[in-house]
Image (cartoon, helix red, strand yellow):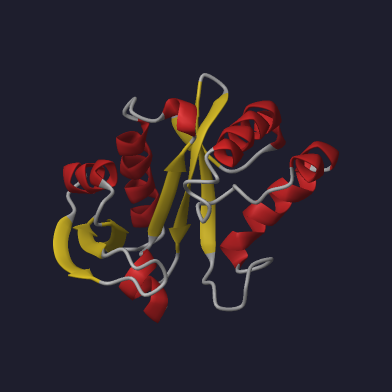
Length: 176
């Protein structure tokens, strides 16, 4: 099991994961990869991979975004989930989003992959020179809360999230 940069090598399992994400889109419409076009992925997966990789340079993303390095968690040659490590924080990320955001494909949840992906992402953040990682989760996301705390997360505060109406728990993790 490892974190890798997005690659066409994982096209089939990634596309299957997108199908899974789309099936849960009614209950989790804002989570990543739900809005991807399966047709576009089938037609030009290499272009999608190039866009994902270009985010590390701050390219091909909305202006208000910061550079973020995308990684995929793979196990046995299969795509399991993804994580974004944001290279710096803007005010929105400091308050709501944090340095790290991750998601495990629905069929692989509850198997310990969330803990593993965060553990590996914290190593990547440290390699990028980030010493203190901000990470957040929704108040009602018990699984993420446990994962964050298991990986050294120290609760800083709880704030309302004006975007969703659900409170956000804000943690710091020291990776020095």
